[in-house]
Length: 458
Image (cartoon, rainbow, N blue to C red; front, top):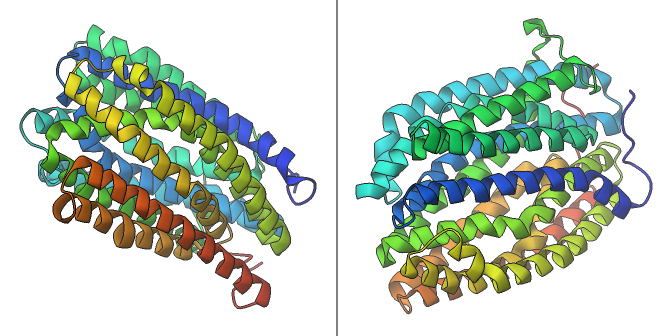
């Protein structure tokens, strides 16, 4: 196999080499998120419910992302381990098998979402104008799903191979298209908030077209034969074995927003707009950790396929320190400039004041959990996504949600008490994550855990 060798050499340069293209693509994607939020806010700058509606829909959009991340993560892990173990047959059956899975998942999601859109949004705290805007946004966003999931197949293959430049190009194409289409559809076609959703759909379609072309010209070592007979049930099962826990992991995060949204709207509906504003712009500081996670998945996955546990540990340590340093500085910068950033998107004084209160607390909480991203990435890419899922469920439903509810309804019953509870939960997450990582590697080294090298028999 003519593949990129990630199994030897210094780790830091490899992380930078693989991470930089993803960082560039994520930066373009972030630019889209910021511009998209700004365009939506400009529909009526004095209406706080327009931006809040995107936050209302986010838990459902997170379900789409959960399926996308699950497919991408499962495919990436399979490809990386197959390369590390020299399993050519698996690589040859990956694309068609994963595309069949993506098509099936898209159909299920859309058949469920359309008839239950209103009750789901009401469950997340939607009412009045917030519900009206949210429903309009969601219905035009739903056609994005098949493009997202099919694109996840191709990006998963490229990530497993370490060919991150094409991932960057796909993200850049989608972002540029979205930025161009937003004003044309929102204001030119007078679609309003629906135009923002439809622009997202069209831009995802263009990204998918680019990725298909990449594979048609044989840039990847994974060949698409476009044959139904090439769909392998054992490959699909292996993708699901790793990817399904990742999807459930993200789905659990989505479900948690039912509680978070309800807590925020119980305090004041405007809080949801403030939190949405904060979280969208916080992504500026989180781009490096996502980029490093992508690089870690390729390097640690190939090391896992080769049975090189020492290199997996080295990858974890190096990426963690890099992430803490870079993201920590960016989070600090975000806190310092946030008043000016928020003022560019909102004129409502209550929204701005609440966002200013949220920012230092949430940035601190995010900083504490940065190492956990690397630990769970290593677990998933080595084929132990179930462990990553278990830890994430513990983090959300035994720490974050209960602590938030205590702060909102029992102790303090103010926004400050909720934010303090979030920071405390993040500290406990950090300690628990480090302990879980230590146990994970000890189990690998002693043989209590064994890395699964293959999905099919040759």
